[in-house]
Length: 252
Image 1: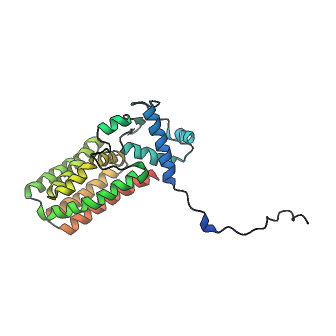
Image 2: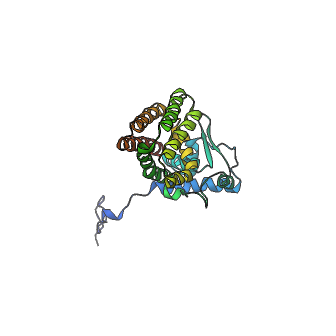
Image 3: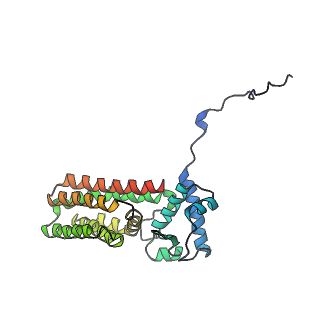
């Protein structure tokens, strides 16, 4: 048999392109997060320990930096890690301590890293909070509106204080949920409150986010003051979509 000409590719049937599927990057993020969780569980990483810089840790784990950010972000939301602006990422507590202090367990809504915690968290918030705002618009009392107005004014004053701003932001949303008059919505949102709070620690320090949040909260407040259920729901949805996009953008 004659030898093939140089440079001539081997003959054979072409492989159909549709047999190749894009790898799920979230599975890599899950594996990276699982590895870090295992190090915390074994005691190799203890509360207070600082993780290596992002570039170094990504190389050690064999993942890209965006994938590492997604893994770290999920662990921050779960309460195992804590990001400190300008200082780095630290182990916040052991897995057992996180469970004892409000991370998902038998009495809370479980948002597991395998199910994309950021996406799952905002899926729930987008289902519940716009409806809470819609209901509140037709039920809210003048006294409750005045309380929201005061919270809003305090938020404006504390735009330069992330910790205080986040606390006021949480309370603003909580008062709307109370004004909705729905014990079911309130109960379900209470079950994810610790996760929602930790997500705010990620988004609340991003450049320009406080100013935009103030503007979005003002739109929500005006709709509630006008008892306009449609606008209240739309304004709350727009606000949550902005924050969701910000967080997902950080992860990618």
